[in-house]
Every structure is written in structure tokens, then in C-alpha cells.
Picture 1: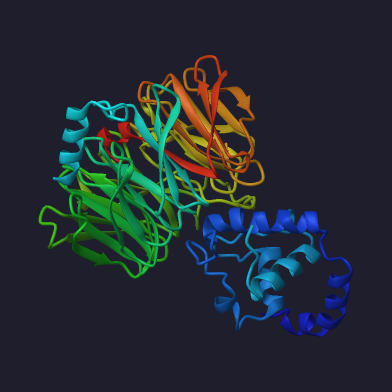
Picture 2 (picture 1 turned 60 degrees about the horizontal axis):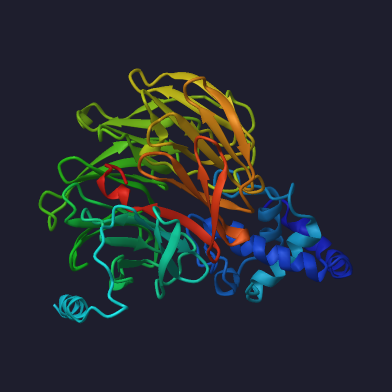
Amino acid sequence: MRIAPFLFLAVPLAAVAARASEPTPGRQRELVHLVRQDCGSCHGMQLTGGLGLPLTAEALRDKPLEGLEATIHGGRPGTAMPPWKSILSDAEIRWIVEKLMTGFPKE
Amino acid sequence: MRTLLILLLAFLSGCASTPALRGTGDLGIVIERASGRVAIVDTSAHSILARVDGLGDLSHASAVFSRDGRYAYVFGRDGGLTKVDLLLARIDRRVIQAGNSIGGAISQDGRLVVAQNYTPGGIKVFDAATLELLSEVPTGSKVVGLADLAGQRFGYALFDTGEIWLTDLTDPRHPRTRKFKAGQQPYDGLVTPNGRHYLAGLFGEDGIALLDTWQPEAGAKKILENYGKGEEKLPVFKMPHLRGWAVAGNRAYLPAIGRHEVLVVDTATWQEVGRIPVKGQPVFVMARPDGRQVWVNFAFPDNGWVQVIDTHTGQLVQTLQPGKAILHMEFTPRSEEVWLSARDDNTVSIYDTASFARKTTLAAESPSGIFFTSRAHRTGF
């Protein structure tokens, strides 16, 4: 939460950058597979939750985008959520969060 | 009754489609996780006999078997509990028993099936014949590591509150529960093959909680404390799974959390006697039933690998790449073969455990768990 103000300021610029570097269609398919299958081992393949919280659009409705990005990037210490920064770029994380918040694509 | 009649008619008519009488000792199921379906497999013929649809969300699923080996009880992610008839290849009964479930167990006498749930947290007790709900024990926490114990008891661990509970279902409508402090965030549990020791692996701290169910009043103690030596954990992209398969001879082989190691413990003293570096974060560390080998698969992104430890020498003897996203392994009861599911290749591969040669490959849609009926006769399965 400490970093929220900084992220808030950074959003308009980052949003432009993310559109510019949106993952290729091939990579998007890989990301959908990764989220459904591998995030799914804790969050459920339907993203309805398990050991991890539900990631449906409804469940995420009131969550700030930046917070979700930070969680994927750095994990959540004290929980089972690992940092994905070694696997996913910031642009990929942004794409995943945007898709989660609007209803994640099926494979 | 109707079933018997059909079988009788089929037998009498002797037509070509008559199902031959057969046992179930060499049967099993493979979960097709994306399709809500199980494949019924024959481990002697290396074949898929039939498929059964309609089991709901199986993105995380596990199964136990009736003691006659005829029925599989499949616990799905969506809280579905489905009793599948392996001989007639159809759903016998099905209930939605919770909002979000993780697995279950069957009682010592085979009469009770118990589900462990995340939402709402707790266990539910069902009549194994009818799936009638008999009782429930709310826990206020996600339940992990449910295992059957002697005396109609069940052990399980609570992820959120860090406890081990023992519930006695001698009177299945009136559960009696004892609670023990375990440690931070138990992620799964197991009971040793003799049914004596219940172990809960801890995610929130280095160590494993150990409860002697022969003398539970002594409480749970911590073993393998500080195995991480204060070093920063590597990311754990998938929680390891524990069962009685951890034990081979007088040693237990356990996945380290956040370390690419298998920890070896002497089951007489519960002291660490070694650790074996492996390729990634172990998920399943499974002893071959005869205890001579331990097979290990890994969390993403190393989930294309499988490694084999020779328990006699304590050395890694084989590294295999059986396919993309190896989710699960299951040994035939007398150890000669192991079946491995490759989710992203849509295959199940059967390996010879002596030569490590791939014998055959079966097609299955996004396969995950593989469960053979031999589990029906093992405590803790």
C-alpha cells in the first residue's frame, strides 16, 4: 500500500506504454494458458479460487489495478502467492490484470 | 436392481456386447481436468476402457476407492463429490457438497467418505453407499491433508489457523474432535503407511509438524526445523502434495519448500539424515511401493522434468522428460510400472521402472491425477 501513490501517478504513462508493448497474439495464448493452468493450481482453472483467492472479474471489481500488478510482480509475503517477475514482464502482467478485470479469456 | 437385471439379461442373451465378468484390481481412473471427465483405465492392458462425463470442475481433483474396488469417489474443485462405477462406466451418485473443495478420504471400514473443503472451511461426512450427509465439522479455516486413521478417525490440518485436528467418527453423526497446535500455514498432510504418525508440511515456516496418533495427548512436535537455514526461499509456483507415499523403508522423503531439495528423514528418530538436490521445486515426491526408488516431479517452470532417486544409494539415478507439464504419477501396485500424466501434451505415458523405458503412451485430454484401485487397501489413500 505504501507504493500506491507513486503507482497512481505512473498509471497514465504506463497505460500508454503497455498498449505499445501488448503481448503478441501467440504470447497472449501462452499467457491465457499459464493463468488458467498454472495460476489455476491455486486459484482454480475457472479462477473461482482455492488456496488462492478468486480471480473472477466480479471478485476483482473493487481492487485497484496497480495493487494487482504489484501482487503478481512481487508476490505477497506471508501468503502462498509467489513473485512472478522472473517469468512475466511488466507489460505481460498488465495485460493479464486487464483481462482478469474484464473477464479472463477461455483457452 | 435394474443394473443386476441388465447384467443378467446381457449374460443370458450372450450377445456380442455382453460385458465379460471381470475384477477391478487392475483398474484406475485418469482425471481429464479441463473436460470434467474421468477415463477408466486398465493397467494390465495399458488401455482406456471408457470415459465418464459430467463430473464438474476437475481443475483440482482427487479420488479414493471403495474397498471392493468398484467405485471411485472423485472430489472436484467445485465441491462436487461423484461416485463413479468403474464396471458400468457411469456415475452412480453425485452431490455438490461445498463451494470449493480440495479432496477427501475414506474411512478404515470403507463406510464413510469424508470431504475436506476450502469454502466453507471444514469436513463433511457422507455415507459411502448413498452419499447421504451424516455430519460436518466446521473449522473456520481451509482444510488440507485429510487422511484416514485407525479407529474411524481422520487427521487433517488447517491452513489458516495452523492446527492439526483429529476427528473420531466412531459415531458418524456425532463427531468428536481433538485439536493440536501445528505451526504456520500447513499446506498438506500425510499419515505414515502404518497409520501411526500424522505429518503436516508447513508453508509459513521451515519444518513439519508431527503427531503420534498412538499417543495424541503428547501433542504435535516440530521436525526438520530451520531446514532452510534462514536463506531466502525460492518462489513456489505450485504447492507440493503429501501422502503416505513419502515413506520408503525406514525413511521419509519430503519436498523442501522454497528449496530445490528432497529432505530425507529417519522415521524411527524423525531426525534429518540427508537432503538430495533436485531440478526444481518438488511437488510429488513418491516412493515406488516397494521403496526402492523415489520419483520426483516439479512445479512450474520445471514441470517437464522427472527425477528418480535410488533409495539404496541415496543418489539420483535418472532424469527424464516424459512430456510437457507432468502433473502426476501413479505406480502399479507391485512397482514395475509408473504412469505419468503430461497435461500440455495430452498424454499419459507408461514407464518401466527398472529400465526407465517408455512402454506406451495413451491419449487423454489435459490429464492430471492418476488413481489406481490399489489405493483402496492402503491407509492414508
